Length: 320
Image 1 (cartoon, rainbow, N blue to C red):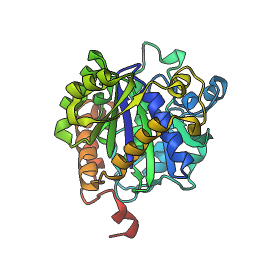
Image 2 (image 1 turned 90 degrees about the vertical axis):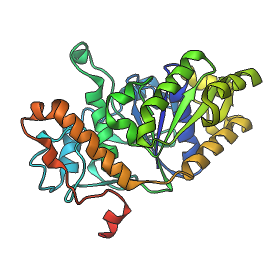
Image 3 (image 1 turned 180 degrees about the vertical axis):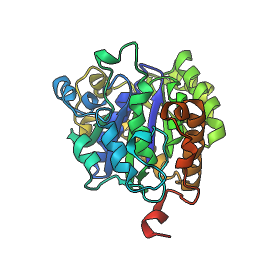
């Protein structure tokens, strides 16, 4: 199951993504965490020191190698150089499993605080003023497009803050999206943006309240997000320490907040995977990007990369 954490900057989405990843890992569940936020704080939130986090390999640095591996012998893709972030898989493409030996994971995934983690990479000095962060997040979009994950496997992605995720089709790559929401007007406004943008795409969405100090805070959230409010994280010394860069063992989390993580996992486990919709939307956004910019950049019609007979999903493994 692919899970996104989104929300207003400062609402605590990275902290919640880290808590949820650590909680799953502590239960012995199969989990892979991906940091797709421009601020790149997930590694520290799951237990790395800032120095260790700075030395992690990045998906952005390996983008060309990732493309070359995923291309496989797909006859519709002549070379890695013609792949863009939205290029969908087809017959002959290499697909990824959450747990397996492959050069992408070997190069980019490291275990931090019990969590298997890959990071997109932040802006370098040479990127400032000339590069778009979505070009770096493209590695995450390619990986999710080629990932065969099962119901008992969890892929947790910390997304960039605000509604910026809607600048690409990345927001459709998830089985469930958690909007982390403070009891404030601005945070509720970001939630409404997500609802408005996502409603036409069948995005399964739940709100997790954070920094909720009392019943009035919870009532404020219910007034603004209604039935989408799944649960609320109360004021927590454990959470505050994580937000201050001092990750504590997940076993120390307060029982009431562990119960919130239980509800989140149950919501994820109760979400169906619609592989036909997933594939259809991957193709839709690929064609949009091809027409908007990618055809001109690559110098060919990238609609030809679409394999109309291919549907990503478990049936690919069985050959049916």
